Image (tube, rainbow, N blue to C red):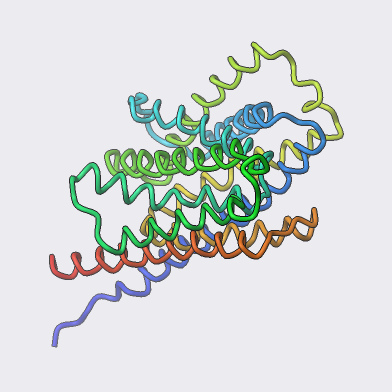
Length: 315
């Protein structure tokens, strides 16, 4: 009888590390969102915080890359440049949404991104949408209607700007996921290359924000001793660590599995927002958030099963 090489424990170990990295990413994003909300209440402008956090993350990645980076640096591709611009809009829109909406609602809208990724894939491959995708899309749209309080308020009371910005973050996050996967797969990037890619991405974003801030003047309120420690937290915990962990985890677990675990972030953010600021949601908003999370999770579970089935058939 032929011996079977012990591959399963190694694969399980890699997957476990990837899952832990995603959980840490969720905790970082949820914590930083609440710290950012506190800064906005103190008068800090969202775009000022977006620029400062990007610059902090860039310096941190440069230091990290100087210790871990090896080999000759590769020239920047057009997709890497585009990824940097997408990150600019993603972080900026995310902070504006957090300022305009309850933290949990802003994050729930952000996590419609996996559904948009599936829709984009279907459009790019010209494949018709399955019934499951259509059901998930219907659930998510119903969820958006409920979390936006359209059924509970008059049209004048609805924060249309906040809802629109929140949906924009989902679009930007979907573009970030698609471009990241393409860049990583094309370059067959390892850990060191991933750090270099992320450093280039944040460097582009930082240059954009520096140019923007030059037109706005010195952000005096943001640089005061009272707020600077929280700005550092947002830059490190909200940008540097989670995006580094996100790229690292995508090399160990599938994007579908990562998306499923990441849907825990609205729950974590809701608990923190309740503990720190006393933010509560209406029953219909809670139902709407649950519908969006169920839609995303169901869709990603189905995609994972389909991927595993095709892998089994190819073997």
